[in-house]
Structures are given as structure tokens and as C-alpha cells.
Length: 381
Image (tube, rainbow, N blue to C red):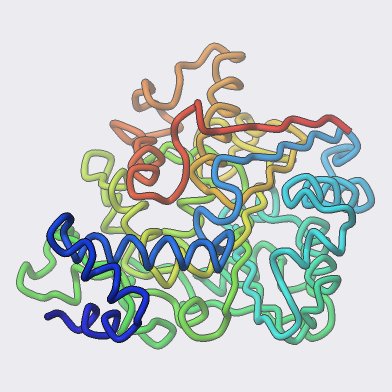
């Protein structure tokens, strides 16, 4: 008898069920189903991905968030308060944050610095999230702001925005083409895929792996994902899912080496489905105050627009599908095809932008992709 059933048989109630139904149903299926049901009833909504609110997206538009292209701290703070209360269905700002975090948590905030100073995570948004964590009892000393490359954090100026005692960290110093530096990565947690860069050894398993940052595996117990709403040449969009897949692990450029050697469609959800990632990311706040609809992931000024919106959720698939539709609507407005049907031009070189990574993530149980199961609560302040 398998070890799991030996342990379960020691429980009197379960063993009696097994005895009664032994001739009727498959014992393994019954026991495992009973245990899962009992666990779900006892534990209530599960944190992590897709979290307590699968399919729920809160979209708060606030025209006051920007003035002359600059983020306005007070309206941003008000928008985040409204969004968090709506998401958690909580009576107060503090109650909303306490539904996700508690004193003693060590929380990582994954920022998005790739767009540089013009289109990266913003100081006012980041500080409001830190304030919310404080409301839940999380001290500044237990907050780590991070991304993959230290140089990008510094270039975006994010290190200068942090309140006293809040730390910033990165597993790699700077971008390089090899991407297999291991000092900041955990050798015990990786996504292995038969995907190599041209010239890599086909017999070296190390080259087929993307290892998870030690920040994710060892330094924090919960994570807030803070992406910016952007077009991406190979993945189609870079929102919640890609901010994790390409920000939490190394050896990522093998996923999109050239305009025709592109595997982001399967690479992105394969990374995010790692248990150490999906169990720790409990909240996503998408910065769509400014966004890009073409030429990403950088910030080409002619393709940046101002939705003046923040999106909140625990379900990265529902959030990404909502964000994709926002970008496609903007593209339609300016006479461009949807991302899924776009072809290379001088500002976006990849043959096909693989937005299917969102649908595959849904198939893997990372969230809701079906329109019938996504509920977007749109509020204009």
C-alpha cells in the first residue's frame, strides 16, 4: 500500500469509509478526494495563485492620477485604497490589507524597471503599497523591493524612493547573454525545458534550466507583483505573468532569442506554475496609469498612452486578459491590428507575438481565462 494511504488508514473515520466503499469505488481516488475536500473546507480561500478571488478584476480609473504626465501621490493613494477595499470586499483600508498580510510576514514587491524612468513602477504607487503593508503590521524591515537586475533598479531610480529600512535587492548585477550566474539563484528550484540557445550543449541539463531567485525561495514568504501594462514584442504583452516568469528566474533569453526563435507562449506559464512561485504571490497590482501599446517592452514615446487606471486582483490570468484587451482597444483606436494578428514592423521585430501564454496559463490552473468566468468591476473616481 502506498505511504500516503498507510498514513490515511491510521485515521479511524477515513479507514471506515475505505472499508465501506472498497468494493464500490477506487480507494485511492476516494481517499484523496475526501482529504482534499476536508482540507479546502478547513482552510477556506487559498492564498497564492490564482488566490482567493479567481476571475475577479478591479479596475479603478482616476483622472487625477496624472498631471502633466507626472504621477500625483494623493490620487494614487486614494485609488489604491479604493481598489484594495473593492478587491477584498473590506470595510476599511486596514482590513483590506490584513486580509492578505499579517505581522511577521516578510514581503517582496516585484517592481518593473525595464521601461526606465519614463515607464517603470512609480514611486507613489510603490510607497502606497508599502503604507498598506504597514497597516497590516508588516514592518519596513520586512519589506524587500526587488527585480532581476540591480542595474535596472538603479537606472529607474527605484532605490531612491524607498522609506527607511525598506531594502532593495536583485539576484543578478546586470543583463548578459549567458544568464546562468548562480550566486543569487536557488539550485533546488528550477523550471527545466528542452529549450536552448543556439550553440548550447544539448547534453548539459544546467543549460535547459531556469533557476528561481533566492529572494523568492528563501528571503520572503509572500510577494506583491507590481507590473506595468505594456506591449511586448515576443510575448505580446508583459503584465502579471511575464513580470514573474522573466523577473523571478535566470536563463530567460532562451525563450525569445530571435524574431523567429520564440517560445514565450509556453515558457512564461511553465515558470509561473512552479509551486515556489504560485504559492507565494498573493496580490497583483497592475500599473496602467501610463502604458504602452506597441514597441515594447521599452517605452517608445509615440506608443505610450495614459489610461490613468490601476488594476487589482489575485488572478494573474484574468488580469492579463483584461490588460491585453485594454492594449488591443488602444491599438484599434489608432488603426493597428490586435497584438495576436500583428506582423513585424520597424518598432516590433518578432514574427508572432505569443499572447497565447495567457490562455496556456489558464489551462495550467493559474487563473481564469474564460470570459464567462472573468468579472471586471470598473470604477471611475
